[in-house]
Image 1 (cartoon, each protein chain N blue to C red):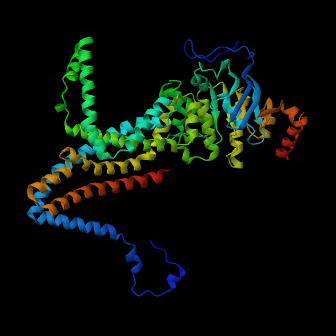
Image 2 (image 1 turned 30 degrees about the vertical axis):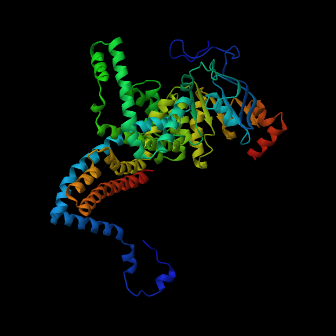
Image 3 (image 1 turned 120 degrees about the vertical axis):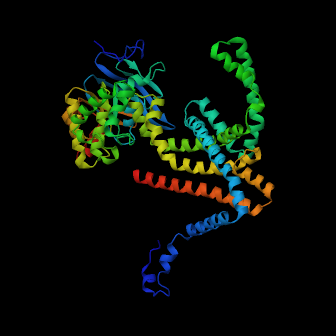
Length: 290
Length: 264
């Protein structure tokens, strides 16, 4: 809210309430109006309605893929982030190479690369390992796993799985940097106090540093979830039937370009805006606790 | 009879011939530099079991570095440090076992802000000493009673005053039943009215026969409790002696000057 200075106060207002009106969150109102307009279209126009019901199943997959890749990227990212602050040269080097390389490649290229290069190579490894195990240690449950690995076929790995892993790999590099920053933001004295009590480095990490660091990086992680949700639209190039791909299909099916992409954009906005409100609430709660 | 730090079979290091039976801490010819600045130059120090040793000197003189070398938070460039018969700089020494026996209190407390006061005092007992939660809490409550703040057990460090924080930090270190306590300027970050409550706890500890190495300029504490005083400047031990010797008749001019400046 604008604070009136002495001169402004003394000057008589042409129209009263102008200041109050200017301070209102008009942007939110405008967004809301746009939303209401699209809802109205969906409610009244059959073409919009048709597009909406066609696209809605894509929303489900978009959320699912985003959640799955996000959780995976958190796990990879935490490991890599610990590598980035590790004094172990090998661990540090591997993590740094990963982070620098993956962050330097466009996510779209990375997705295609994982889907068409990494997955086939990984499968060949799995097949070789499986047949090796079959020959050498095929006992009980191991034999079944070996057989499964040896007979794994490229057709058996769904594009959805490849795409999810690709997105997770890409975001693992970002999350690694978030975790690294979080860990480094904890004062050095915390680890020193933990070590001085006889805790090992990993105990200090697990019980003292990480609980504090993770709490501190929750808001940026929330923002990254929003980013991953938006980037999941890239999966459309791999023909994963998420929201954007269904948009393409719907346009091709109906030739209703405006209706289709208005609705697609509207659905993404609902997801991202409600999530960003959540992140804001989280941020505010954190700042109170500090 | 020498009691060694031994938790498990075949643990820890070798008994060094340098350490006499009485000297629980032996520091011999320790050098440490950060880039071009020399923090410690041929530092030597012996602390007898049960003694209270006060290290003082101008800032940047290497006091904290020397103290932190004892539990290996700083790694000396060369020289030997033997704590209770164990060479701490030896690569074969499991430093965590040594540290569990050496409590440390920091200038800025370094309490764990995400844990309650009680959990601050119990966590190392549970994770390092492998005590049960119940036993650890019992020990913690007794210690909080002893440092005078049992009612704060469920508070978080952020809700405490500086003096209370430092007393929790002392309780946290004591909970491990250490053989040695290190204090790194424990009262420097405190408001004047809170210094006494921390010094009182330290005086009690000294009376009970705890081996203590204290970096501090609290000369009142030195007079009341110290068995030996060490004056450190420019990384060198300039002078060492009993409080009586140093206060009434210091051998070095530098010591006399420094003491007159802080005692005026």
